[in-house]
Image 1: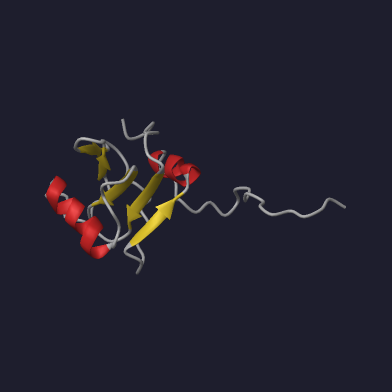
Image 2: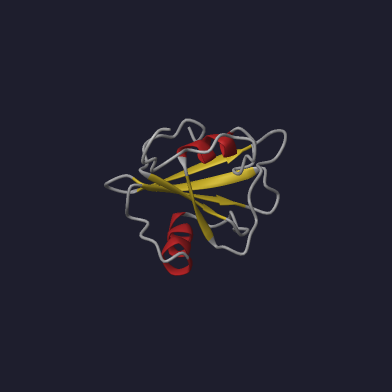
Length: 119
């Protein structure tokens, strides 16, 4: 379900370790209090524990929250750990993460925006 999740307009990743014993209310409070974001929007919030072999996703679906959980049987997620609490993901970065890749791919082509003329 998480690998092909397409319902959200945006996706955010919690870069710090998260205690995955937290449920819906605990994760929603992290989104509101630590990230200063609104969990009641069409946004997927992703959380990862210390072992990096399992993740939780929190998503608001018009009448209630959906809590998604995935545990890998082999390997770990290439979860970014940084001083930033939360980070926005592009759809491509989300796909990379779900495939076990780092969200920053230095050899990937960058999207070109704002060209004014062709020479």
